Length: 395
Ligand SMILES: Nc1nc2c(c(=O)[nH]1)N[C@H]1C(S)=C(S)[C@@H](COP(=O)(O)OP(=O)(O)OC[C@H]3O[C@@H](n4cnc5c(N)ncnc54)[C@H](O)[C@@H]3O)O[C@H]1N2
Ligand code: MOO
Image 1 (cartoon, rainbow, N blue to C red):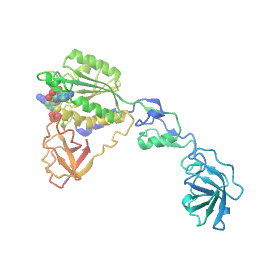
Image 2 (image 1 turned 90 degrees about the horizontal axis):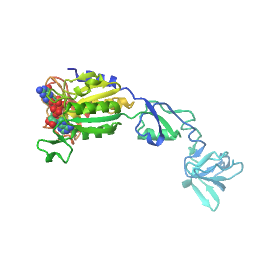
Image 3 (image 1 turned 90 degrees about the vertical axis):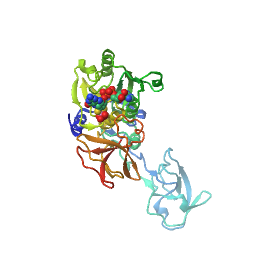
Image 4 (image 1 turned 30 degrees about the vertical axis):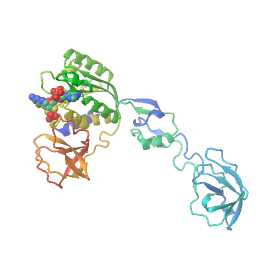
């Protein structure tokens, strides 16, 4: 059995970016750039006004107050008015082209009007209120580097590059196989004696989508070796990552690993010294990664957070550790001495302090909705008193 750190290291090595594809720009949000994104044009593409007001020549402002005839208008999106060579001003708006010859824009709050005459009384401010051509970026500049995650902020930068398509890393395709004779779809379990609602795949599916993956199929399968082998074969064929739940332990119907064995499975690890989730396992078949999560719902979700998240991020070309770095926070509850397996206890934050759930059972489902942190307890860590700091991960 390997340690958590060793298992995570193997996961990081395994999760290399998938090949790229070219997609239309509109569909590229949350993807990762496979190539540098360069701008097509200067931004701004010409000198533009930063304010609504009046464009003037400095040579007309030597004696204030001054009355300047309005000789032209300039709106955002319109062609620039001709060059200014005589005394006068241009009525101009934010984002509108500044005609040649105009030195500054005076905001309209500081200008009085008398019909078609603009009257400038007060001394002009230091700011010229003109955004120069190319002052944000120039044509050919690299706006975003290969490997950038197209977050909502990056999407605005990317759109400004004026490209209709971009090269991005392919979205990881996931297949979920939930195994167990006892499992029935939610809404049907009560109709079958001994059945329970299949709950884990729903959480895992939502988690995959939230972490940049595409769930192409989610199946609930009985513990029949033939059925499982068939499902395994098509999952390997169709998916970049297969998540198998249940059957990971030593029970007589625990077939999760066996169902892949005919396909030349290379085991990355089997069992990690953690609690919950000790039976978690990971393998590779050709180019497909298989992650086997224990069937107990809390164990499944904790191991998904610890191992599935970095796998998905890595396959999608993202930083494996994005948003995952541990933090330290004071606990408002005492925590008992830990056993010899590293323990990821479920808790929540209240008033900036760590609280633990009383129910730390690996089969628990009732607390999952409210458990938004994992408290990492190292092997044999001593008891923690109220007010001491503990290591937490977002869950
Ligand atoms: N003799 C031993 N027994 C067990 C060991 C062990 O080392 N020796 N390990 C225990 C640990 S730790 C865990 S965790 C579980 C994991 O077992 P499996 O992955 O084989 O899971 P199952 O036996 O299939 O199921 C466990 C439990 O979870 C329920 N389940 C399964 N799948 C789902 C699902 N998709 N949705 C909701 N609930 C699910 C299932 O009904 C069982 O109650 O093994 C211990 N045993
Ligand atoms: O690892 Mo199991 O999740 O302890 O019950």
